[in-house]
Amino acid sequence: MNTRTLGDVLIAPGATPGEQLLGYGTALAGSALAVALAIHADLSILATIVIAFVAFDLCGGAVVNATTSAKRHFHRPGQTAWHHLAFVAIHVQPFLLALFVPDFGWYRAAAVYGLALTGAIAILAAPAALRRPLAFAWVTLALLLPLGIPAVLAWVAPILLIKLLLAHLQPVDGGNSIG
Image (cartoon, rainbow, N blue to C red; front, side):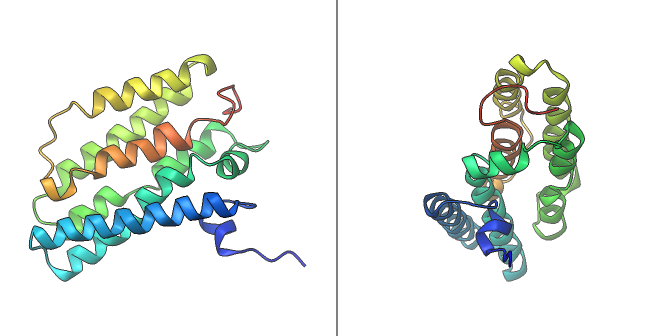
C-alpha cells in the first residue's frame, strides 16, 4: 500500500527529515515575521491572515524547491519546460495580496508576477549552460526596479523570485534536465 505523507505532498516524495525541518521551519519563521510586519503596519486581521498564508508558502517554498528531494521530483524524466512554466504561472500570490492588502494594488501585483513569469520564460528558453547564471542575473536586476511596494510586503518579490527562478527552475546538477 502506497500512502503519501504530508511531506510527500508539501515538499516532495521521499523528503528527508532534514529537508522537512528546514522547509517547515523556514515557512513558520517567515510567516511569523511577516505577521509581525503586518501587525506593526496595523493591517486588518483578514490582510494579516492572507499575508501569513502567502509568507508560509513563499518562504517555505524557497527552501523546499532547493532540496534534493524536490529537484528529483520536479526534474524527473518527462517533466518539460511547459511543466516548469505552469508551476511558475500558478503562483498568483501577488494578486491575492492585491485583493486584501491596501497599497499593494494590481499594478504592483502584475509587476511582481510579470517579473517571475517573463523571467521563467527567458530562463527556460536559454541554453542549458546559461540558465543558472541568467536566473541570477534576472533576479539581481529585477530587485533593482523601483516598484514602490509597501514596506510591509517588501519581501514578496525577492522571495517569490528566489522560490521560482533560483530554486524551482534549477536542476540539481546544473545540467540540462529542464527540457
